[in-house]
Length: 480
Image (tube, rainbow, N blue to C red; front, side):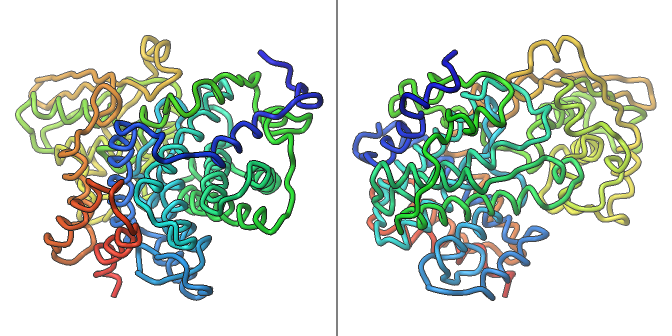
């Protein structure tokens, strides 16, 4: 591994990143990368449309409206025009609000929900509205987040820092700097300014608080603001990643892997390895949910009253993320708590054969049978799973026993929607439609079809402001 102090006599890796974004040519991005990236864009916009109606989103949307300012970019959840950094805050928060956006299995980072809102806001704000440039910038930004995660050498999330927010803020600053046509030195300053301000922690996540969603928006807001500060000639740190007090020196336990950050950059796009979620909860529960659905079908879809026990085996990482300490996890009171409650989501899957979006917010009366099932869920750390799953989301097995003695068991290695079980275009579009149905009003099917047609050929769209406007129209009805 390289010496962490190498930048005292050489160039920090952040210089290379800055040059990559300052010189990004959308025409150099392969068509297959653009096509794959568009699926993540469709997925993110769908998550944001539904997320505009999730708990906490109304407060952010109202705050963006109250603050107001120069009408630069569209707020997807309201259709209002606000400064780019406020649009980034609001749109990133709503994209993450339901935990239904894509996530990288290699780095445990949520990718598109910061990069796309930033790129869309900056495209509108700068007048550089070309669709191919948008898709290319999203592909590059998503790739950078993954590369930063891989460069840490960290393959688990046992630590308390949620470093993806810092990585997302770096990527947003680079994308925003590209749209502002900053020089490599200017983008380097933007990265340095981000480093001087970013904080992150998983404390709110394990408590079931709404802070992870808000923090996603704040990371996007920070990255855009720092790019604008750099555009005004404010200078950030130069040794951002490898300096004596640079990011990797100060905050990461493992030696910095420069090759993972810079190797084949512009040729290998790590963001394309992320998974598109089938279920709107923490990815560490997805294999258990999928296994539950399979066992339920094996047993002939028994009613909840027929089930006597549900056992789950998973990795220690997943166990501590979504099960232990058990406490409030058996009785989540908010959607945010549901999303990190293995007993509750497995109970929902056992009762419904999936996770309906309209059941994310727990209802004590409607969900009495879910509470009873959640009490039957017992999870354990499976040693074999634990040995193989450190660098990816946990495989899981589920065993359901019925009162009449019948028993079924299923093992799922890979979450649905992840590499190896990817959602194709049809699957992504179906998920988009389901998100649009969560706005509380009858779905405007013509508008949905129009938006999907636009997104399928996004690289050919002359004005991506159309996409922002159509997204707002689809998200807004029940907010009136």
